[in-house]
Length: 588
Ligand code: PLP
Image 1 (cartoon, rainbow, N blue to C red):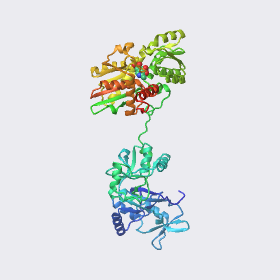
Image 2: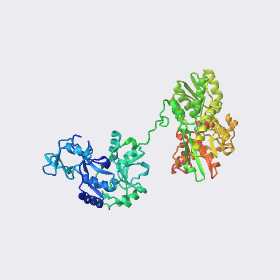
Image 3: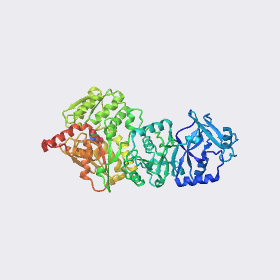
Image 4: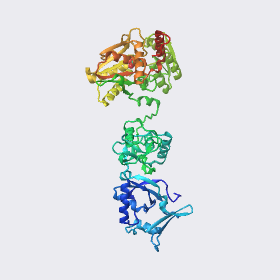
């Protein structure tokens, strides 16, 4: 420090400080009584920062000690500074700084009221008490230790201005030191002082805060907004426990900021080092398989006391934002292992498998050519064009109807036809990952499924799920497939009688028919109740759930993708609704 003293008042543990003088018992007794009855310590004492020797304030130091305090407010000075001088109250006694330090560090103290410290401020030589700020620190604050309290257990009573919080955030991050304690009410955890510190630590994701616990009713509350009526302890507790929070700068309990020094590292939650948990991936492919499991989320709008309904969100897969990323990866890996990848991949798809295969093929430098039924939304062509796939629209209603043509063309062009409808890598990836991760996710919340409901396209994911869960839980779990009602189009799913490989290998308890409008309306319901924009086949699953569900049980709905590809279908639905209701109708 270039200045001879630090203006900020530090809260220092009494144990750390050293006396250089004895105290006068009569004066000590008197002062102690005064402090006890005031319930505050008015002025900070002066201490040498190098030796922790008290230069002025030994009676206050001893009073606090006897009053059971742990800390004392201190103004630190640099005793080496020539601006600080030592004199004596006693005539004819010559004292040096060396005498003071020897007495402070050694056993033999000077008699009471021997030294007199002076400080040069400008061209005036003043008694050192001139730098002792009036701080009025409540004894409550001085009695208690700074504890590391769980941030969850402290409750702000007041709002803060972000612009007041950010400088603290920046300082803590830069210095690695939290230098202000939070004062909280011992009983309720309501914050009385240090709201900005609390907010800064919260923004730093700290798990703990440095807090001094006090009894709010022992504190003097200073209302800061004079035109409002004075704020009471009860009002602060109510604001902290129930809300609403009081406006910024409504009150304070300390006259001055008190400084402490707590390493920020001790307050932060232990840092997670696992890159998987931190979601760091070495390639976009890792983003897929290291990203599993896809989330399982409880749908509160469909659950009640006895029934819980969970959705598995396959839209969280990175490439096609659908369940089909899994089979794109698995079929391509399998083909790579068999040495069956040629310069291009041909596939019949209703979009999702096409996007998944093109994306993954791009990472391998392999081209994709996709055959899509004309019934599928136009936006698919745009997405696939961006990804660099060639798209052929076929005059068929169902993807599966294109297989013959795709197979023929692939052979003619020496391309690879992976054929999702027949390729066992489809079923296998869902058995190894999708089904097992779902079971583990349910186990993590102590549940076994009563019903699992999902759409049927190739039947890959639901057949694998059926095989896994029926073998593990037998008939305690019911497996329900979902197909479009006759003559209905729901992208991604189709009727069982159109031919499915794995569906016939396993047990399904029921297959539910759903119309497109029912699927759309169920998707809109989920969007408006749960805030999730789900795809049409997911909407069909929700509709099937509504049809078959009972009042109790654990229901799992597999949502294959999100709603973003189906703007066309949603738009048509709203248009038809408007036409039916007349042109004044709103879009609801
Ligand atoms: N839903 C959507 C949106 C799909 O794209 C698909 C498959 O294409 C399915 C459901 C059906 O999945 P699976 O082929 O595993 O039966």
